[in-house]
Image (cartoon, rainbow, N blue to C red; front, top):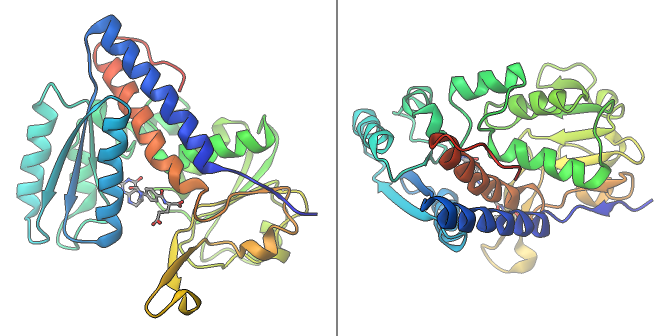
Length: 297
Ligand SMILES: Nc1nc2c(c(=O)[nH]1)N[C@@H](CN(C=O)c1ccc(C(=O)N[C@@H](CCC(=O)O)C(=O)O)cc1)CN2
């Protein structure tokens, strides 16, 4: 069996188009142009690319982008001051602080300082709590992208056994909860899980979010399963030339594609959904802040 490749790039493009349509409606009917503020602290090369892409796609969708680039030495107090300023700015509907932050800054303190109504990353304890309770709210972008792609591949997720490998705040924990809210039976696996391969083999939906290149092997995959690979690992690619690199996921793609029913590639799978979902969350935040009902995006 060769799996269907789930095209995250195409799905993300379709979502960005829907977002642009909603932005146009907000402008026409309510004279509102949503604004997204993205804060980058430091010089991490991958973060710089992601932030630049966020700004570009925000503008392409018809929204306003506010970019704040701070030096690596920025103090936590200065960052908190900027967040307070963005919380108070009526033109800013969404605030995202790019992760990872430099080690001298307490990430939890920064996330908790963001106005939950503007927390388009969905990481504030208030928004995390809403996911736990199964209530609508702002949902973390990558986890939301995972669920959209799984639904795209297999339709209704109810009753499926989902195994999520990894328990990070950014992906593993929220995606487990979102899958529960879709009526999946969810197993959360992590570094202490006993016999991980046999647990993975029971998964109808296998979400790999461990951050370890190609850790999930083809013979860990149940035949016909839907595999969602969240990993983005940059590895040397001498075949492309000196010093060149390439991206691989947390799943050994060439092995898994022979066993799975559907699988996301890396690149071109979950990654592009992250920014598209961020744009969708910004529209949702802009509507809810003005007392308008959220639209289905
Ligand atoms: N505050 C946040 N920080 C980070 C998040 C997040 O959701 N909120 N996620 C990641 C980085 N990220 C967005 O911020 C992100 C990661 C990957 C992609 C993407 O499109 N990946 C492409 C490949 C890109 C490449 O060549 O490097 C793909 O997988 O096809 C977009 C956004 C950590 N920080």
